[in-house]
Length: 480
Length: 141
Image (cartoon, rainbow over all chains, first blue to last red; front, side, top):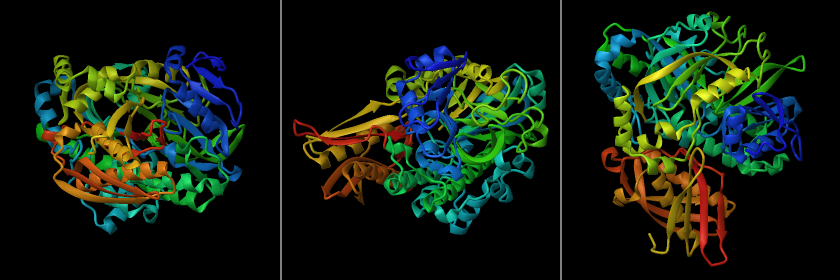
């Protein structure tokens, strides 16, 4: 991105001043190197979002921002219903509530070294992954409605996990206001065989080891120590969420003119929060969030079964579960006043700081765990929501942080450069076992196809979005 | 596929662009569908054994392309199939098509990533001065 017309607010914060149809400025959090490497489309998309009705304070982009649809991936924007604010199906995206969940294992690296290949095989056998895979849970209409209302709470009632899991999930495992009746029959049909499936593309389940600690106190609060083995999985609301995105994008594009909304880009498709369509979308989107939470809960159960086969008696307590592609109603302080806002996070993570009322008690003093996925050969990170006092104090971007590394090159280019088998062999030589049914899928997800996650996380830390707690290195990766 | 139909994928930072072209709008749409299959796996690996009928109507040609590709995404997802051959007819913003393919066989097809949906990003349907039709958009993978 050309830095011309950007105002530098700090070493890691850049302002795109109001111009043209922008109602608020744009703010991009990034190092000079990261922002220079961003596509010009990010600037255009940040500016377009800034022009949507009812937007509050600024249109934000996280350090991993890249060219998305309508919103940049890594985009954050909040809207006030009382000021004509909108909810945008494009601002949430197709993969509603795609997110990361991490589990403790109670095992150390030395415990699993000798069993690593067997564990990888058992996980690959248990976790339905990739195109054409189907889950073991098939829901009738009443079961589907209960799942869409109950999320992970529904899954626990069905025997997948325990009540203790629910405290370690955003909204404690269930978003209120889900409306199964607002979800199309097509969306429900797409989900019929997909409960408890990982998906494909950049979705994965990894066994990781804590390789480095940056904040001892926070790591203790999160029960993380050097050498600890953890499990992280990345997936979302599967076909149901994808179809809801498709259905409402179309409907919102067609309805925008009648609502008096001029869309600079059809992918910004949105509807007033105070409209029948806006409310119906919120009901369907919340149902998709619950679907994603239920899906990750079932996958957690399957991962526990696989671990128990190799390590009898081992428990995998939930560490935390974060969602990336959402619109959530939250209370934030703006210019000294508390306001209820609808915060869109598109490829961004909620990152509430210490003391926030919506955190589990055990994390209240530390802040929300922010789980950042890297590529399969590099690293993932655990961060903590930024504090209200101290360095870079204050809530930035409505309590949000980055979500991952972001692609450095297209899938086409990655598949052209690398062969899946060679990637698997090279990683195996470094002690990282890959299990995938698709060689091309592995090539498209090759480590070097992604940006440097460390640079992204460092920028988030320096910008005050969240603070670095621990780095996780991959040991086993089951690719979708 | 009609020999005049061409298809290609094009780069998008996070996802994949699909583009079809041909002497008619219908050929361009068939090409875009083949390009979408190519975002998943090599279309040549898919035997056109089973036929599925697809119908859609939209207010304009660009929306019709999005609807067409999304109808195929839906059929692929719910039938657990992949498609490699498309016979498309378009009249007055109404599309009727037959898509041929076969059930997903992971070992045979080596699918890399599922398509979640067709987007309005880089969406274009146009009749070029040389008489060729072009139909393209980015699909989310």
